[in-house]
Image 1 (cartoon, rainbow, N blue to C red):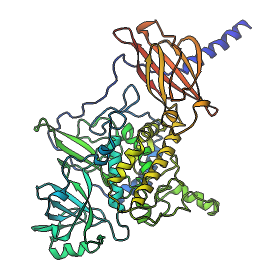
Image 2 (spheres, rainbow, N blue to C red; image 1 turned 90 degrees about the vertical axis):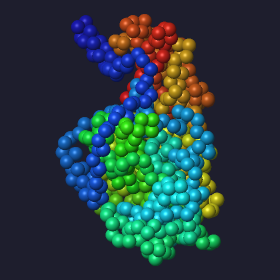
Image 3 (cartoon, rainbow, N blue to C red; image 1 turned 180 degrees about the vertical axis):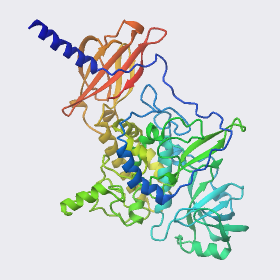
Image 4 (cartoon, rainbow, N blue to C red; image 1 turned 60 degrees about the vertical axis):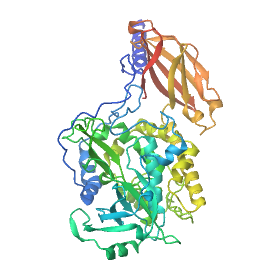
Length: 553
């Protein structure tokens, strides 16, 4: 009987020990930036984008072969010890890491005066690719821009939605072009003597004449006083390499070391894109540029951009006359089967959507939005398929950092003609922001800004500190500490949440063992759920305890 009791005790101890993650962090400050700007002396090869092949592979062939490979779930890489993404050529921490005024959000990536101040504009050619009208121009300073327009059926929609999303993605931390709304008159355009018409996929089709420009501009919306509204996108510096592959790396870029399907900054973009209903996610809407280093012009490296946001904020659903956009894939086999089995008798989330009768507003709503089931147009973008709840939580924390004034400033950058349109978009973005944040906050332990202060563990509980949920009175925490061999130190301590959301525990029982390494398990108890989080603590050179690592199960 004694032997049996000892066996059960061994099992219990083993189970308790196993609950503490086998993760160890170096007792050092977290990495805040990675050096992926090492010299790439030879220009990497430009990737050609074949739209139909890309989506065929994404919907059918590659999806099938991936399933047959039985891929195991892998945690994201490109993450530091505090479970954050360091700065790189892919991502720069902005909102929440440095103060951004509403005016800075309104300006976003802009670094120079508007081309509106530097007319006339000389047309060099029509644009390459895409389905909309556009010209490549140089303003009176010689600065090169791409001009794109709204169709008459949807005035202000594509240009406005593009600029709003451009500003918000920039504030989130992504690289985007310098895009802005401009107004001009036909007489502000001068056709260069050698201007050409470009073929859709490159190459010259013929000479561009004033008559051809007039025919093109007749198809776009004009204001009552004869002006033309356009999106002006400043030409990016460097040599274009096409979009990054959805999985794997660029073999000829020695700085590209993390397979793209494992990058946290790409996987976590799912939550941000769902907030913005940026459904047009494909390789052609990303662009890598082989660029000179501003400080050392003989050194080159690749910078990774997101581009083309005109089909966001419901624009794709409106322009494509397709209520399903954002709710299913364009070719969604699972949704087709569900509809077949139920004979269409189940009310679907997208069926009752309606476009507000406001200029510059598309089919963008908060009522039908489900952050967990949002879909881009295609499953071809692999980082979204490999993303887990922790990646999506990371993206949601960025979404949650925007204030209403910052969101309103991004909407103001669209220069919409009707104030009601700006008010509607701001209100809807805020509503979707709250929904996105709360959905992913509920699927992990949403504690942030974790620190050790006077031997107490202090943290922000994001649903409370953001004000998105009134749950302070029903939230409790349990803290248990362990040494570096997963042996418990002292008894668990349970305490309530502070109404502000910034809560500190009672003094911790810290390890005095090897390297003074302590693992702190923090359980957040709310709505009948208990979500754990592991905080790794060690002492600095002055023997002061500090957080050196965070692990989310």
